[in-house]
Length: 248
Image (tube, rainbow, N blue to C red):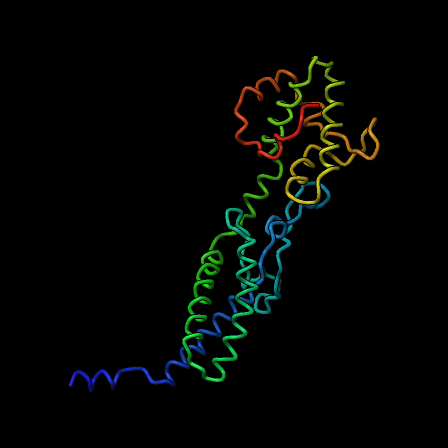
């Protein structure tokens, strides 16, 4: 009797394919999600009413007909700094290719060991994407860090105080301005160049060709006594790539 009951409740081929068809529709949405970039997560700083600076969200938006306005796209994997986003991109691209192959075999109702294997791989990738999808984006943290120059100040103090013999302040600042401009000019676009670019404002250097001036935070407000205090602190906040350059 047990065997007869088991046969009665076991799923039919039709049930199996219906479940796979349903799961495929879920996976199709997941693997065709937008992937938010770091810059999109951070947004852009703008002037509100010409007075106070504010942040504008630049992530992809959709028109919400119900509320009559655009909203942040909800089918989007958010940018979270601690996540390997290169790996996420690879999973999205590989998942789309594998999904296309699986859809063709499911449509032909080819239940083979190869299909079962690929189905398992696709679901593992989907699990990793789903985990990141449920995380909160890093907009607040990225924006908070935009004006945080603590690491740059420690680096600046460390390198300024290496200059020997100790120059007059104006001469030392000019030497640092020349050093940092030369570093930026030698770097390709990317995080390292962005890190060093935070030393500069929009004004052109007075004495250096094709260079920019240091901001007031470094060129005027950072005294030698301040730098001596900063240099006494550990350099653990300063990225290693920034410490590889010779002293000015």
